[in-house]
Amino acid sequence: MAKFTYKARTLAGQAVEGVLEAENDRAASARLSTEGLFPVAIRQKEMAAAAGDAVKPPRRADVNQFIMELSELLEAGVPILDAMRSIRSHAPRREMRAMLEFFDGVLSEGGTLSAAMSARDGAFSRVEVSLVQASEKGGFLAGALERVAQQREYLAEVRSTVLTALAYPLVLVVVLVTVVTILLTFVVPKFDALFTDMGSRLPLPTLILISASNLIASYWYVLVAALAAGAAAVANLFSRVKWRRRLEDAALALPVVSDLIVRFAASRFARSLALMLQGGVPISDALGMAAGTLGLYGFRDAADAALVRVRDGSPLAEALKNAAFLSPSQLEMIAVAEKAGDLPTALSRIAEKADKAANTSIKRALAVVEPGLIVLMAVIVGYVVLSLLVPIFTISAAVR
Image (cartoon, rainbow, N blue to C red; front, top):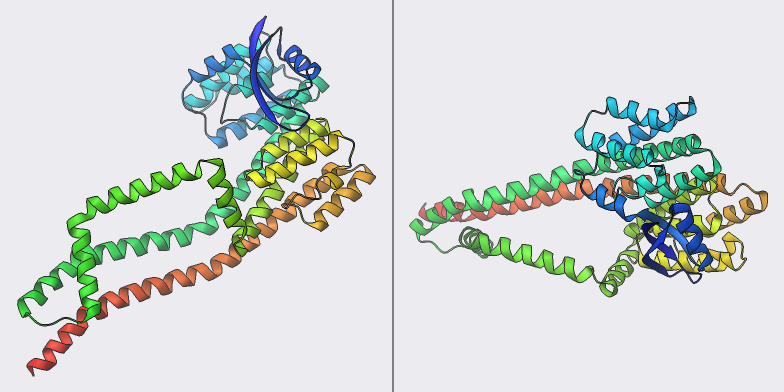
């Protein structure tokens, strides 16, 4: 008998964790089911310890490549252990080779790929592990891995698109901070010395600028410490559920930010649910997993409540009617697809449309932010230049 750690949900949707003894992960899953619990993740304790001894997690791109190659080799009829060893023989990085060596050990001892994946926190999501676990039971592992690989590739493209769109505004922010820092720490102090020698009365904008420069020059370490302490305090505050919920409510009250949050949540939820349903995961288990992909507490609560209604026999669209991350048109698509028996296709379509809408919103927002940052930079630099030149012109005119 081996010991397994597990994460599961009750009939009411409440998350529970614990440890139990069973002959294998399937027996552990069966035991949880008899106790009225719905397994979310199960892994052998010895596996978790062994995985913890490994080096840092492999790169996301390397894991994506591994999943795709394993799918292709299994599709070609190569036994999984031989396929794993073949991939490990040409893995380019130490982290990836270490993970594949661990997988080899688990499989050689009679373990499953899903059990090995669940022991590698950070490398694979719960959705991916559950899909692989269901495919192992159903005998279609190669197809499931191919869907996982396609999902990861698509998400990588979305992530790359978002980061590319944000690159230019981030560069502008860095340039703005750098310019202001150089002006206040190197340029303004020289003019301060000049104005002191002249002994003239300075206008208010110049006095404010010189005071800010002196403050930074004399107490920069205090300012850095205060910023670090403030950031730590805010992070600690919002790590608490009560304040995290308040932050989420505030974010959802902002027009553009709210649209992005809702669309990305709809995309993640629909895509995860579609992936698991395509892989043969029962809808109640799939819905519980998809709920776990939602980052906001309010969205997760709505999905958990929907899970309870689905288990009571309600249609999915009816159960999700109070989920704020799904629009009425998306719920209508789900309802029609349920009746037609084509729910995974509809969910995939919802996810794709939500991603496109989110990307469009980001581009529109950045189209306003980028010129705004340029104008802000011009205003700050102009203020500094005028604050320094006006006193010089005034003194020159007085001398004449």
